[in-house]
Image (cartoon, rainbow, N blue to C red; front, top):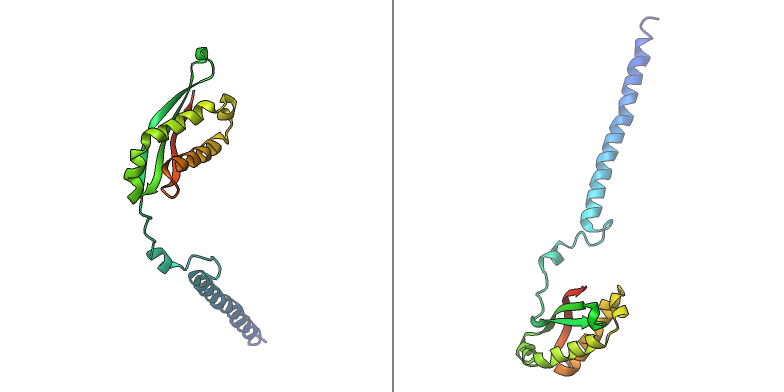
Length: 159
């Protein structure tokens, strides 16, 4: 009887190592499969586009024409409120000299429009988007179609 008891204990030890070994093998396979899936872009789309990252497209052939800062007095003369706005005009490099030549007209359009805007409208948080769109359209009319691509507002201070 003394010899029969150690035999089942040895069998249990061998049986208990098999599930651990299977678990380790499956964990390694799952880790390798997850690595492969991420690398191929199956789990996270766009992560495998290493070739697309290397081929970054060139910037467009553009130039920025600075516009002199515009300071507009707002409201009644005693209110002493002012709007200071600084902008730049995005153009194709070939059109930059033409747009710079028309700067006095552009400044006139900007001043005229800003003087006509109500102070309450300027205080609205969404006002900058509307003002920018209105000024861009007016500048495009002055310079001619196709010359001005965008208007960038670099400073907009209302005090």
